[in-house]
Image 1: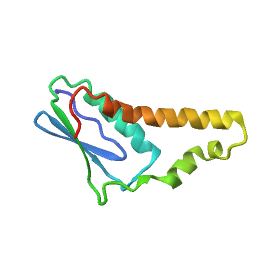
Image 2: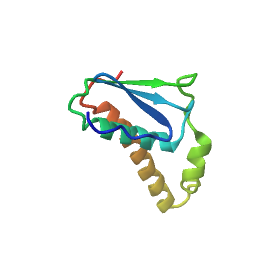
Image 3: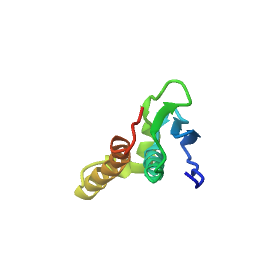
Image 4: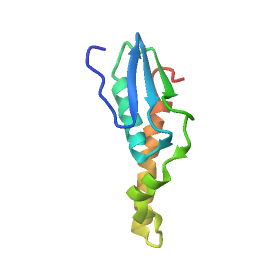
Length: 112
């Protein structure tokens, strides 16, 4: 692809020929990582010459999972429960975060 790859807060994106290499830069998964993954796969989906994507961790271990502190600070009110509005907001936030990883599953090229 002729355009330069964007940079991301929580992951790196490098190229090795026709292969894109996405590296997770944190052992936990803050909400920003979900957004960065979605944006990276949106960007890569435009590359007609891309043949594969490697998804790896640049830190050990691969991941501990969701960054609970970051998630609670960003979505804390919705976790309080008790009100339909907050529950609906939490549901929508979870759907938005999930949609980012749906882009990985729907990638037009293999992801390893």
